[in-house]
Image (cartoon, helix red, strand yellow):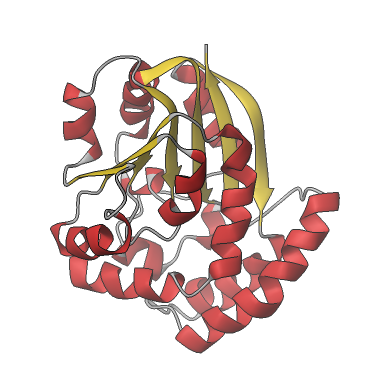
Length: 233
């Protein structure tokens, strides 16, 4: 599984516009002591680092940790922890972080509500939780199943999880409406269990800029992903 996931993450890392878009949505809320859970190969981490005083990375995969350290951990502003999120949160100091980031991670966690509650405890008062997850349950595919996704979210479902853990929603929105149809055809309908590198690069070069331009002016009512910013009460 780790080898398979590493290959998929390497392909996804070839989507700079995609990660730029996510980082731009998070940037105003990233400051001080920042915890990123499940950074993978650090594609988003590299974009968060300039805004953080210190970036703490919690990556459970032993297969990814070496390359992650090689890509980003040479900075004195970065600490890398090879732990599961549950293990890290069990010993994390209370009220230690200004922001916690989870991008394409929460769907991998069976008890998502318990983990979100644990994150709240390690945030400072008014600290932010920044989440990006796959959306639209009807898009659930063989690839979701293969990489260990327990679910795809709706905006309402994610909002309920955050509220139940004691967060106020700053904003929550769907993203990447244009990605729904390609995902449904390739992954859900035809059952692909891997990303096609050429298609990924093409969508990043053409689809992502178009989607971002449109959705900046007209936030969509549906999307392939949900992005949320929540504040600890």
